[in-house]
Length: 146
Image 1 (cartoon, rainbow, N blue to C red):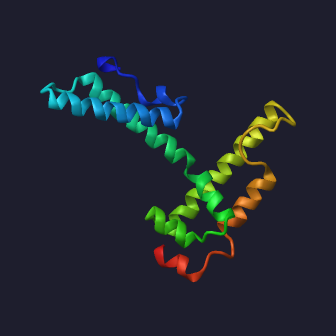
Image 2 (cartoon, rainbow, N blue to C red):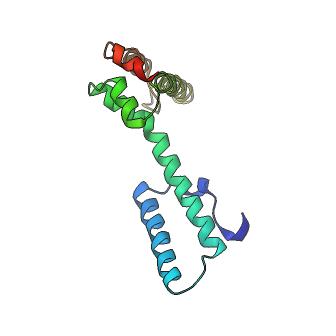
């Protein structure tokens, strides 16, 4: 990578807390540098972009887990759509794709290591998640955002 900055993928194993701390540090150092009349270095600029992208990926990857938790808590699709400012149909479709992907991940892990708890969603958990995607909690109001 140019200017010696690490790409966002290199931050995949860094905790969200550490990423946030680094990002805030980069913002703070930029403020101090500006006050001192120092320009941002190319490395600082690229690192800030990479760290902010890593944070974005971290949060985006956890989105479906958060939606599943909300649905399990009895939250309606309309409420989820309202806080995400997104259409219900799009959210449901993304959620279903995620569930199918998690099921495939579970199945692949089971082929490699049978009876290992593994990763992903078991058939039972995937079926339950899909029922939530189509649940009775979906009301006519849910479709007003579609």
